[in-house]
Length: 201
Image 1 (spheres, rainbow, N blue to C red):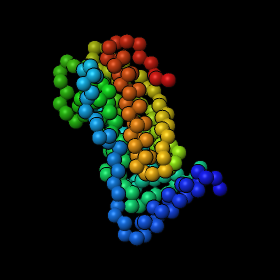
Image 2 (image 1 turned 90 degrees about the vertical axis):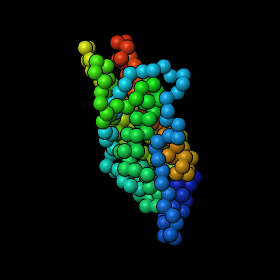
Image 3 (image 1 turned 120 degrees about the vertical axis):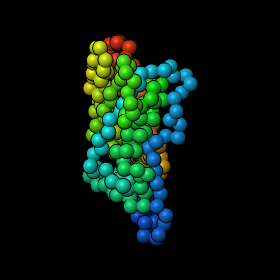
Image 4 (image 1 turned 30 degrees about the horizontal axis):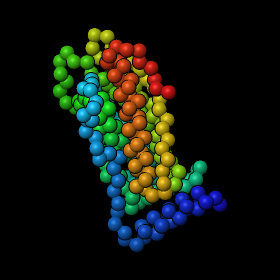
C-alpha cells in the first residue's frame, strides 16, 4: 500500500465513521465567493449559458470521490448545496461574467440587434481524488448570432492539484472551472470581434 493510498483510505474511513455517529451534514458549493466582473475587465459580449450536462457517475446529492483506479465512494454526509449540474452551471456562469465582462442572459429578454454568444458545456469527466487532484474534462461550444453567425467546438481537460481535505478538492474544482471560463471567454471574444478564433491549447 502506498502512502498516497493510505492517506486516501484514512480520510474515507474517518468520513464514513463520522457518518455513523450523527455528525452534521456538510454542504459544499462550486460557486466561487468572488464572481463579480473585475474592474480591469473591459466590457465584453453578452452571452447565454445553456444547461450543463454532468456524468451520471458523479451526479449525486453527495460528493463522490475516487478511492483507487476503479473504486468510488459516495460520502453521504458531504453534500452539494444544489444538484451538481446546477452547481457547475452557476459556477461557470459567474466565472464567465467575470472573464467576459458581460451578463449571462439565459432565461432573460434578449436585447434586439445585439450579438449574443451561445455557450454549451458537456462535462465528460468530473474526478475527485483526495490528496492528489480535481479534474474536469469538458467539451464546449461557442456560437455567435447576428449578421455573420459563427461557431466553434473545443475541448478542455483541466487538472488542479488538491490536498486530502474535501474543502481542498472543492476549491481545486473551483479553480478548474475558472480556467475553463477563461478558455471559453477567449474564444468568445475572438468570435465577437470577428478575429480568427481557435481552440485553446
